[in-house]
Length: 440
Image 1 (tube, rainbow, N blue to C red):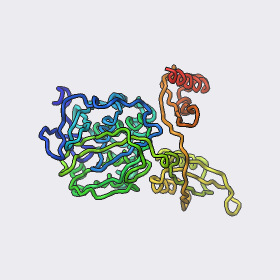
Image 2 (cartoon, rainbow, N blue to C red):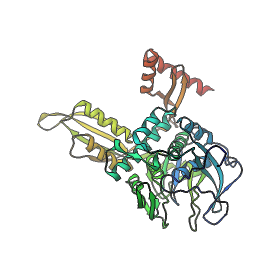
Image 3 (tube, one colour):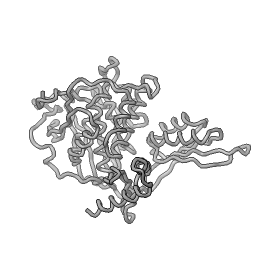
Image 4 (cartoon, rainbow, N blue to C red):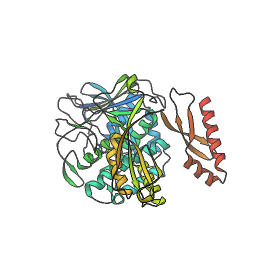
């Protein structure tokens, strides 16, 4: 019992039990230390990463718990993570501790639960997130991570998405990993770039028996992501770590053009011969040539035999799956038939997945792919308190004049319906609440 209330739950994301505490220092091993894990640096403010670049350096691999720990070590206040986990309304306790990982000072994240966790269907995870009190940006990012995990499991087991049941991934510690990481990335608001992902080899014991490393679900989550041989005989990348990374990273490169400002280390506790087992995050200003444009693709499909309902459904699914934007344009096709061009704006990393979804959800027989770029205004989601409840707003900032602030229309629509007031009243109050918050 670690605090007299919760028994320790071995936590290594899905398949690897990483968190057996050790106090015997050896090169590559992690030693957990006493003291305040946040005392070594000043905390970051919300939005501190807006306009900046966050480089994820998974040089020794990545897991969900290591990601949360690295975010806290970087400067995301642990209170932000705790509030997000508390908003889920599930039993469990999380903490961070100081750690020494092969001579590197780092932070360690751990979860304690009261009992063995049941297997959770993906539909239950969706309901839990949707009904939670999570901030809008955190909830949306967590939903995208779990959808990636669910699609990976569906592909591995060749079952429909709604039939997916999470085993290790559905446990409280993995749920806390995903939501904690989502809260940290949302709090920062930075553009995320990652290094190529080094993969271990060997085998791992799972609820489905012995499987090869990288685990099948991990590899599915990493579709389209550059990978390397890590040269280690263990699972150094877990499905949760892979899903979070593939969801938040907009591109993958050895090292971005960046001026480093903050560095965070997140420690695992698995022994790795000859190297510290830690994930590194680097927050800094992008170099001038890297700060202006983002490389994208536009996907297009022509259809002349789809109803408006199906087109709307396809657009909604594409947005849900991570498209930056999606739209339909009326055209006249061969033989004078009226039709539509369904277009998708996406990061290049997501092009294959979204092309497959476009072919799945439409009647088109092909998808065009065009290179594109755009100048981006940094944006983030915030929530303001109103008499109609919490209302999320999209705030777009940067060196382009005063911020653009827009309340999320769907949330305002629901609040107006619940209160029996005109929609414009909720919109106006949300903007007024933001103005008061900005002055304070």
